[in-house]
Length: 522
Image (cartoon, rainbow, N blue to C red):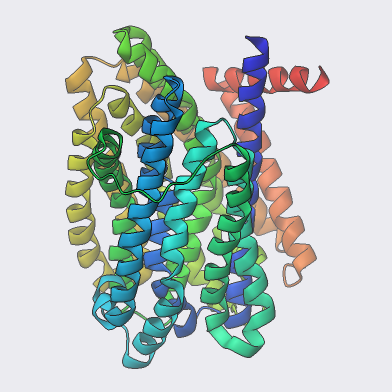
């Protein structure tokens, strides 16, 4: 048992490290883009062209395809029916290759017709550049889906390292292509990097899949019960995961009618906001999911609710100070990471303002990752999808009203409000489904965390205002010192306030760190 637990812990550690590295490389990727081309109509065109491949990457590799494939494939392996497992996997691979190859050809022919989906208000010149860049990236969609299936196969055999490292090659290829090929290819270097990145991921995983003994077969058994079950599981997960991406696309479309660089500012700000989500909130959601599932299966609803509340309180404990810190230090952080090359001080101010309003709903975005999994544990995929569809409509109506008056920051604000509505609606419906959840405890936790985060945010803001008087923030060294001092001071102050407020989450984090240190020492 200890050996098995150690293996799971090592796998979790590898995934956490690669997730952090992936987020860092994602920021470096954006730094290279903005350093080369600033925040301009060219970067807007690239990010708009990147919408479809990025959407499919997040949905297929990051979510629905692997989430639907792994349970089906693993169930056959668990019953010793490896031949059937290989048949399902081979059929899925062949079906993906046929459909996406045909879809890619059609999409390349009709790319101009796809433009209203990603940026319908672009000027003619920007629109033509977007069409050109989209056509370069479209073949990457096929490799994206294949990568998702190979990741599912490897994970089913408890191999986690290869897929995680393969995802790093994706960002590395974009960074290298953008840096070294941009002088010759211009902005097209980045779509070329996307294509090279998904191919590198594919070539990295392929020999590992062969090594575990997987045997591909040229079959297409569309009536196979395993394939049908996979498609049935995939649909609701796909719709649920797509909602957040669709909201971003709606914002992008509305921003396409604003000043050049608005899409770039929104995308960069959203990715900065997503760092604590991707590293911490997603990890918490993934960690509580198996426990929620097992408790729901045996009807232990009291323990189910306690586990859910613990997960939500942990998310609040991390995302509230992260949001306050990013809001207070939005401009120093953006200036440090991106203000170089052709990315100007004006670009920094616009991106920082968008980041400020995105962070308003950060706690809700993290909490949704946990509450949605509670519904899945109860084998209810319909409710999260229904709420997601409604929030898409709310997001559109709200942002249409906001964009005319407040431009890009208004879109970020609307996105945050939509996230909060999504969280509250899911929590209300879950309470109706399971009975009282003990929400008073959750509200107290949120209240204490919010007060501590607010005090911390105000303190680091004024600390930063003092530092800029003595630190040379016009230089990268000074900018780095400014951010390090304020972030470290803010984290220490929040921790002290959490202990002062006797927040149980602080003690849980302290105990977790002590356990990890003991494991390392052993």
